Length: 277
Image (cartoon, rainbow, N blue to C red; front, side, top):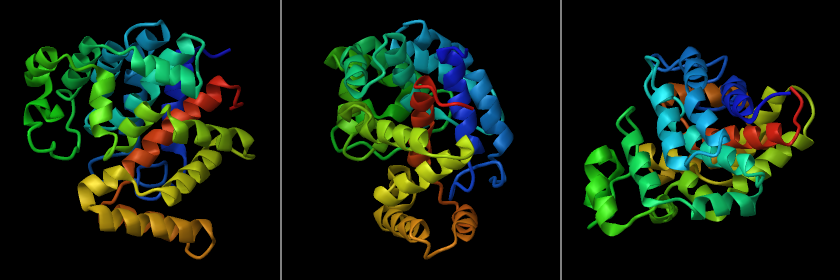
């Protein structure tokens, strides 16, 4: 029987193995400087942080350790967002509360120290984020540890950090709302048939068709994100070829990373709920 830590790592590995996954690295498509092997290595090296969360450790330190491990490959940021989805879910599972309500409880219990560790995780890899709203520059996550003094001074918890970003970041919105898209996609995967990687790819396409990907918004703008969403609907409805769409997005450098992050979390939930592999 696999442990919770092993299921968390397996979820990361299954996510990157799903194909076609328009715009993102999978076992058939890569970017010149970001390859399938980098994601596999990131999943393996994130183990220590995931094991901390599975053992009941604080979310912030578990996440920081997972990101530190993930960064031990030459591709850069492979799974920062995926780990941000998966880590609190691992902690919820450790508390026997792997439900939307249980996940909200884990988020509500986060502390100022958790927020500090979250900010420090940004020092390991480059993460594409929006500029902070006017007046919030001292809390720009790209400042990393330099923002810790402000976090302490203002008493900001990790839940507060996510609340401030939820209107423009899909992963933060999952944290605040009890991971609704993650749990929904997990059920889709559990209800599906065929290879798990195919089910994961189908869940990815469904999520991409449902909402504009916020990572695409950050890197390419709202109009491009909406175009990607509309075309994902067309693919899902059989009006456009998924393989051609996937190739085109890679060629354009448009990678819906938030959608992939949510699928990683969904795979973890499904595995913990008995998904056979």
